[in-house]
Length: 381
Image (tube, rainbow, N blue to C red):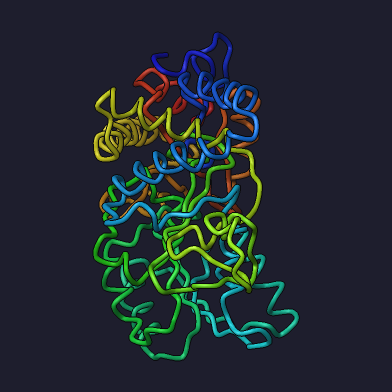
């Protein structure tokens, strides 16, 4: 399998149909991982000059290109998105009971943190149901326009349905209070669907990472930080003042760009992998749009095959059928989701489920034969 011979292209490898959850790493990431080790071994303490002077700027440039950001320096990195969310939350006044507007379909890390803080009375959370999908954006924008929230947090693509926000600009514009923090969780949008946030870059945070569609693995999450918002997070690490390490000035210094949200020492190998994969995609002429188009072809083939076989699930069970309104995975509603996922695992096929949603993600490493095999297995063949 071109580009993936060390993972899903190996003889006997499982049929991986969970490209929404975890992507196999392209072959180029192996050499990048080795290069990270070599740089650490040969550069020693000077490694960090190289990381901050070359590796990080290169990754920032890739992300800025993909998101049409005007300034790559607004991007900060962390090992996971939870670290970045906690730094955003640390920007608010201590002891203040935060008023949070969000949805009933956010990913588990944010959902869990808000639920735990609710137990202690630290936040007052309003959750707007994502369904019915057709009216969600208008309902959420209306709720966001009442100027009562400290934080507005929502996903670009919802993890449990694939429903995608079509007009992020309108939702951000609905938040009239300029002091309100707006955070877009783009983990299922970044590298999955074409995304241009140039018009909201001065107003909204954008949070995502490389574990899913960017195919770089864990450890390379990022935050676009709009200028002026959160100049001095209380949850801070020494890298947030890296440029002022040798300064004799009193107080706790912060960078002016996105690095004000940095933490402390971290494993940089994920950044090497991310850069290598992005370079490979560009060399292969693979854009976000072209990869999405290819996956759509495969999805349609899978749905057609499932309907012909009249198996446990088909197009009529999709949580969202409209390609334009959906991210890059299929979510089927069925109370048999857990059983189907287990049955497929026994056949050496990887999918996953969330409650009554069977989730299937296809990627650029799939072909029509893989889709046929997957459809037959789901139908019990």
